[in-house]
Amino acid sequence: MGGFLLLLDFVMAACGVLLLRRLMNRRPVYPLPPGPRKLPLIGNLLDMPSEQEWLKFGEWARTWGDLVSVSVFGQQMIIINSAKTAVEMLEKKSRIYSDRPVLHMGGELVGWKDTLALLRYGPRLRNYRRLFHQTIGTHKAMSQFNHIEELETYRFLKRVLANPEGLAGHIRKATGAIILRISHGYEVEEGDDPFVAMADTATEHFSLSTNPGTFIVNVLPSLRHLPDWFPGAGFKQVAKEYRATLEEMVERPFQFVKQQMETGVAKPSFAAKLLENEACLTNDEIHDIKWSSASLYSAGADTTVSAIYGFFKAMVLNPDVQAKAQAEIDAVIGHDRLPTVEDRANLPYVSALVLETERWHSVVPTGLPHRVMENDIHDGYFIPKGASIITNIWGMTHDPEVYKVPMAFNPERFILTETHEPEPNPQDITFGFGRRICPGRLLADTSIYMACAMSLAVFDITPHIENGKAIMPNMEQSTGTISHPSEFKCTIVPRSRKALALISADESLGHI
Image (cartoon, rainbow, N blue to C red; front, side, top):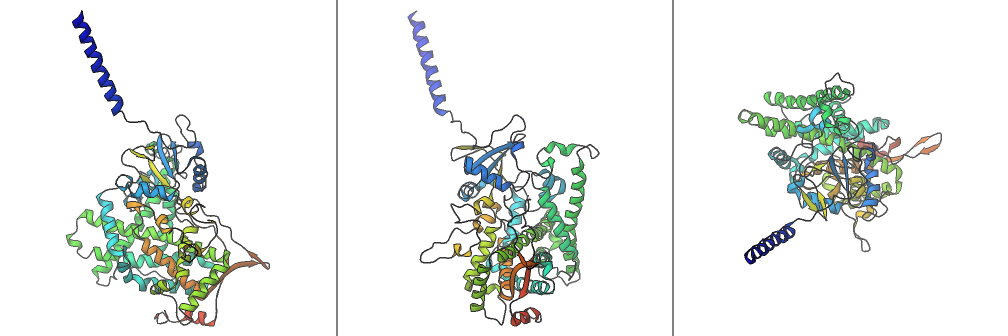
């Protein structure tokens, strides 16, 4: 009996040790970030906004904090509402936060998955980024395109002078002209240009097809398997139309470059440089050149347009800012030439105005979603593998804790004085985070600067007058992955006879 009790004591002690070890090794259970209450099966489907979602995300941030968790039909989404948290997750832990989720309408059905914006994380993404860095990734590399930036912006001034009411179209044409010269060595035609029109249509399709609330298949991916004739499958026909436009936008400029190279008249460009030894290239390498060139062409064709249009709206609403910028240009540049890229270092107020333009109007207000590639614990919260990570960029650039009076357009917030420290550079937010930061940010920033500086040098931008009354634009912006300022009218006239002469001068650029 004593032996049995001894054995029993031993077994109990061993079990106690094993239990204690298991309790000591057991990982604590971390909760998901807080958020609105989820319903069975559909989760937060009824909570998700159908338009201007960044405003709803901002409301959630005020209730639940910088990290908010929602889900729709089991797909987990984590919304980041502060730049600090975005940097901690998407940059400091970029190894696991650099993938893209599968976007079933825009990415899979339409085909944008092969462009840089939606490319999954891996060797092909790294190759695209390497190609971009070599061509437009540094100020030194970008300097080879300064003449193109200046010439096409100058042509923009001429078009605005001839037809101020066509401002939006002129911005789109000038932006497309700069990017097409750099990406494919193509010079746009006056009047309606087919390549600019293609990019305009394709990028509009991108914005619609990648916005979660536009097509139900983005929320219920299984619907993509419905037959085309089935009720509710109309999105499949739309996808076919969108895909045809995208493929044309990718293929036609690429074939243009190849034809120009075959006849020995190709102008220097991103695509032409990479195709110099085409006979030695593999099919995969040609695919990468074709789609990375199209990525450059499409990415800036709409985003930069949105930013420059926002600049003109801001000038109508803020005549005092316009006057200060014009005074600086007059003092530094004078009245006998136009500002150039090289003048930027001597125009601190205009440079601050460009930063404020990029902050005030968020071109991509919720960014492009990231996808976490493995489970993570952040700030005491569980971030599950496969979750979509959404950055509320609009909320970050309009955070009153970071930017004083955020709805006001105030370039001086970025200027160092004896009594004022500059507010954070919005470009650390607006161009994305980590390994998914926009590789064309220097090109976009230069294009915005040139449009602002040259326009302010020669034009007065004032409200549209109707029946003797000034019509002031509102501050609304459109829903979509790429968001545009709402349409508005304004009056644009030369500032002086000298300004008129500068705009009307020959394109030799001797005056720039």
